[in-house]
Amino acid sequence: MIRRPPRSTLFPYTTLFRSESEEFANGWGGRSALIITGEKDQRTSAKHIRNVEESMDDIGMRIQSHYLPKEDHFLVFSDWPRVRTLMASWLRSEKLLSAADP
Image (cartoon, rainbow, N blue to C red):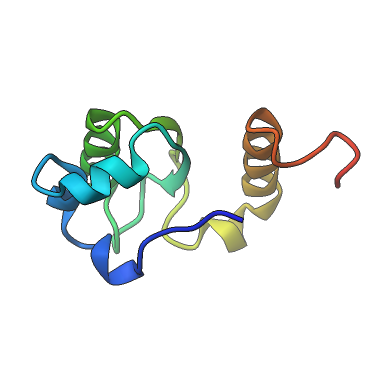
């Protein structure tokens, strides 16, 4: 089971990933994360996600990111097969999903 802090502690404040939040860094440093986002997302810009990704990297998180050039905020609906494949691949690489799982 993947545990995460309450949503309110993650967004929109990217500084929570930086050294200002030692508790967060201690709890999440060294963990893995998958980022899948659309370059055309107007709700959460790719620039914002890149800033968050950089902050996550700063505290030692292992990040695998995919910025889909033609997708927007709802990429899970517009390109579910690709999102599913990316998610399954990452879950397998993290040994959270076996080759037998769909």
